[in-house]
Structures are given as structure tokens and as C-alpha cells.
Image (tube, rainbow, N blue to C red; front, top):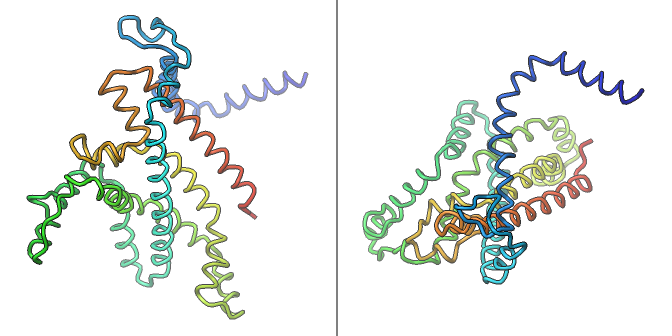
Length: 306
């Protein structure tokens, strides 16, 4: 009887919200076709894939692709690079995002605030292909603007594209320039949502600006920080476009800055090892899921939404 009530209640809701569900249908179909249907291809991770036999006809090899990944010696280096990029992106970007959000919230001029926010947010909409071109116009050894300035000051030009050591810092800097604007908008919305009476009460009690920042602003931003960190870590483990578009295949830093997703791309599309690439993608998914679960647990444990 209870099961029938639940079923009838479900169908009543479907009929009641049929217009909204119909509007949702194209998006649901798109997600199914482009996100869930391709997951059938993960079976290649357990096969020695070849085009003549296809996805479901290629020879079964079990866990050989996973064993090869760990035995190849690349697992440690690409995982280290991915983790270090992730930590750098999250740490530097989070600090800059909160700092700029606080500065914007304290600005007095309405138009100046909007203009500054727009300028900071604008790079977020620029494609990484364009960012790569901007980087080349700045850093090129022969025609780069930066080297032109250095030479005008009597300093020797730097061959950025011939030396691998510069690129981790360049990638982190351009990532911050491009991505900080989005985080600033998120944090600014949270800061503006804080009740001003709390700051007024703290000021009456003698709390300075620094004390108010650590005792009121940061605790109120904690849920937002956790949310942004979760999304940042998920996207950070998928670092590809920023490195690929900034460096390219001819840069000496290509090998030393290779991430897990870059290794996946090269194995799948440069070398044609689809089974090996599929195994790497499953490992990426497993790591992202583990990190997300840990973060959600930490969010429930330490974040107070009351």
C-alpha cells in the first residue's frame, strides 16, 4: 500500500510539473548522450583495443593496462606534477580571490567597483588558445614584448621557450590571471551577504579590521571556501588546456610538466593506445572521487551553516 502511494505521488508530480520536465528534457538528453553513453568505452581499459575488432570485440587483457601504467615509471612523475599544480592553483588563487573580494567590498565608488570587478573578471572568458598566443607575444625570445623591455634596459633576453625551469611559474601566473576573476565574484557575493551589524558590533567591542577579518569574515566565508576548493580540486586533477596551450609539444618543459590528463591525451590520440588511456581515465576518476568524498566529509565536520 505504501509503495503504491509513493508511485502515485511520483506520477502526480510528473503530471504537475510536465512543462518544466519537458523544458529539462533537451539538457537531460545531452548529458546522457555526451556524458553517460561514452562511459561504455571504459571497457577498453581492460582490453588491448584495436579498430578492426572494435570496443566490444578487442582482446581482453584484464588489469594489464593498469599494471603497465605503474610499471612504466610515469605514474609517479605525472601524479606529482598534477598534485603540485593543483596545490599551487588552489593556494595562490584562493588567497588572491579572497584578497581582491575584500578590497572590492571596501571600495566606496560604485562605478569604480564595477569597473574593477569587470577588469578582473574579463580574463576568465578568454580561451586558453588566445592566452597561449598572448604568452608567446610576451615571452618570445626574438619578438616578445618582455624581452624587448629587458634589452632596452641593457639586460640579456631570456629564452623562455628554450628553458624548462621557467614554465611551472609561468603556468601558475597565467592560471591565476585567468581564473581569479571567477572566484572573486563568488567570494564577493558571500562577503556582501554578511550581516553588517556583526561588524558594527565587533567595532563597538573594540575589534580592529584585522580581528574582524579573522573572527567574522573568514568564518562566514568557510562554506564558500570549501565549495570553491571542491570544484577547484576536481578541475585541478583535469589540468590539460592550461599546460598544453601554454607549452606545446616543442617546448623542453613538455616532459617535465606533463600531467595525468596530458599523458592520457598523448597515449590516446598521439600514440593510439586507447586501452592504456582508458585505464588512466579510470584512475583519474577514482582519485577525484576519493578527494571529493574526503572534502565533503571535512565540510560536514568543520563547516557550520547555522
